[in-house]
Image (cartoon, rainbow, N blue to C red; front, side, top):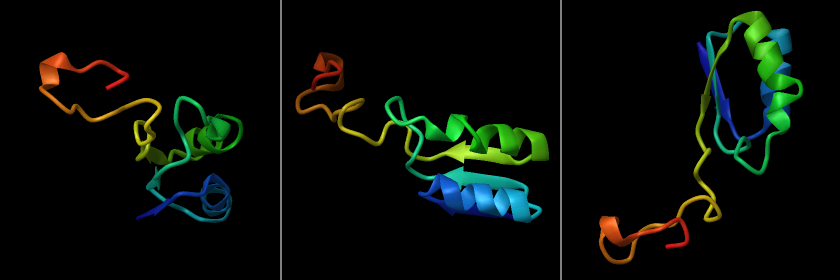
Length: 77
């Protein structure tokens, strides 16, 4: 059984209070936002909870779609 949300604090509460197999952190762990490293991820490891990260390249800062061909694209588009 698992839970998937955007809020790391909610997942921390579920991890502390429940018995889960997997969580999905949908959008709050990226190159720029790594607050989950402090408490949530160590707690998940301690309790044996798998974690899927759903938004690691969701921001326009780290990824932009190509407007021409995929071979002509750079990180700035």
